[in-house]
Length: 155
Ligand SMILES: [Zn+2]
Ligand SMILES: [Zn+2]
Image (cartoon, rainbow, N blue to C red; front, side, top):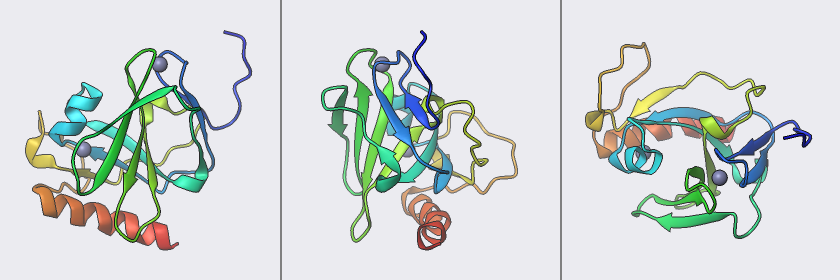
């Protein structure tokens, strides 16, 4: 492939779905929930969260969306061509929509922060021995997530 790679250029595994992120994510998190496991076909999801305004969305038709469960309402999108996780939209009451990007879809040159937390750790496939906070249980995970995310949204 010889196309120009622009700063912040993100894409799915096959390169068909393309979008752009601007700046650093609000938060990087590791989610062990069973939906993330299934969606990502992985033991857990390594995700970066962006404000909606910091992402140039993929073109219509590149991504197939499925809503899994509410609340929180997450629209999870797979690439229409390769079927790999592409991009997700998280809507919470009283909050601007957030965009979730699997870290694997972000360009290597992006200087990503380290993950801040593990959430839904009770449904983990394997224990993880790192120093990060680990939140188990649905509400504890939501609260832990909010505790890390909200100060960054305000900042
Ligand atoms: Zn693809
Ligand atoms: Zn999850």
